[in-house]
Image 1: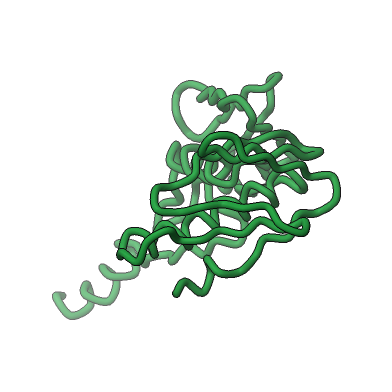
Image 2: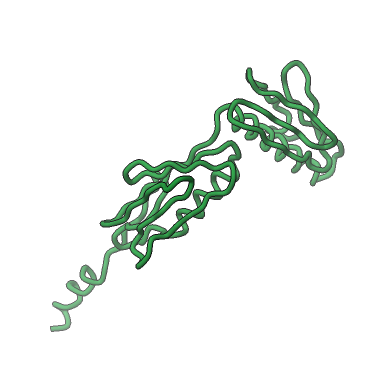
Length: 186
């Protein structure tokens, strides 16, 4: 029995859900999403709730049951409120700017790096903060990870792009190690 799968999904006001031949069409004030219903699962609409049920008692059916419920819940939350990931830029001379829909980054390379977001993703910049927002939770996380991968935080000075609130462990450099060993060798 799936703990997540058996919970019903409450449909908030302003969200419209339709089931069309093994697809879940979800529309809200932020946008629209379409999900394909996973194998071995069945989706029903009852009393302003979405119910997900497993059709068989196989291992894959139980796995898909909880996954389908989580995907449907994320889609409902996305079309009603949207998702946002925030990234910080740290480092002297590191900058970000929005040029139309594109993101232009100066992150220590000899050239500015241009990043074009996929459809459905909005990027905004405030000082050293980059906000990635959209209705699809998976796509928002994927775009944020791609931006972070352009210049990951390095472990000696901490310069680079990181998630807001991410803690980067700073390593001791060569100077700290060599001064302790230099006195013993002389």
